[in-house]
Amino acid sequence: MQPSDLRIALFSGNYNYVRDGANQALNKLVGHLLAQGATVRVYSPTTDTPAFAPTGDLVSVPALAVPGGRGEYKFAWRLPTDTRRDLAAFRPNIVHVSAPEILGHRAIAWAKRHGIATFASLHTRFETYPRYYRLGFLEPLVIRTLTRFYNSVEQVVTPGKSMADVLREWGVTTPIGTWSRGVDHQRFNPDRRSLEWRRSLGIADDEFAIGFLGRLVLEKGLDIFADVCGALRSQGVPHRVLVIGDGPARDWFAERVPDAAFAGFQRGDDLGRAVASMDVLFNPSVTETFGNVTLEAMASGVPVVAARATGAIDLIEDGVNGFLVPPRDVDAYAGAIAKLVRDPALHRAQAAAGHRIAQAYEWGAINQAVLDAYLDLLDRRG
Image (tube, rainbow, N blue to C red; front, side, top):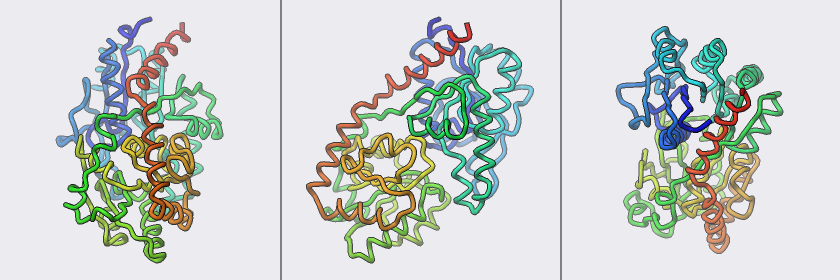
């Protein structure tokens, strides 16, 4: 079988209406598949104001806004008749689901009824979300639901070994492969650093900028980030906070880091400039399966202080290109950052090591691994 024989129906909960690491990876994957001759059709909720243009053919699936103050996201509660007709006309030989939501469950059920291969990619640790909204008691139930979901398909790919180990611990027995992530080395590199841009935000050349990069939502560990900044202030460690991104928790976060410089969303080469202009990326999130922002910082020559959790442990060599810290240990985070503030030689060494390690992550080879996994799955089915 050749790539041109592939007809892939890709189901996403958010293909392009809000920008995040997961949907940017999916769009890059679709671009690679199309370039190799595969046929792809994407099914996802949409909006009239998408964050960016979709790659490939996108079919809109009816959806409702997510309740609880997260209305920027949508969820599809069914696989409607029109969508099923479109699927039948498309005649996929693989159904790829990228989110364990109702739409993904319905797509898998449809594929099984029609004898079509099923494939899932894992992008987010949804089981960790309830703890950030005072619903931690739901976490075991979410894990059981996710375990059933990933056991219902014929192949799973995760961003790295750490997330595959988590699935195995849950009891997932489906074959698990790796779909890592790449980085645009032209966009993310140390040469993008701009002191002039920092000055425009009120950050002096000699100030140590602790960077946050991502959507401003509670599950990114904003509470820990703010507590660590408070600890650094109390210890007299000089620093400024540089926030790249926006989101529903912006006002909440701004109250807790009042001296921070908020640069908002940055895109394209502007994003590369913003990342390279940090002095350290602080990423206390435990919801990452890979950590695209960690890799982007590494490629930009920026050391990373991160939670010892999935994603980060696949990228960071503790003490070499950053520090790994127990997830909610405020004093340990503050101590790691203080080391980089006070030891310029250590900072330079970690920056250079991260840049070197990041060179191995190229999108072409990484996305080819998914295409090869599709072909292998169909070969196993005969």
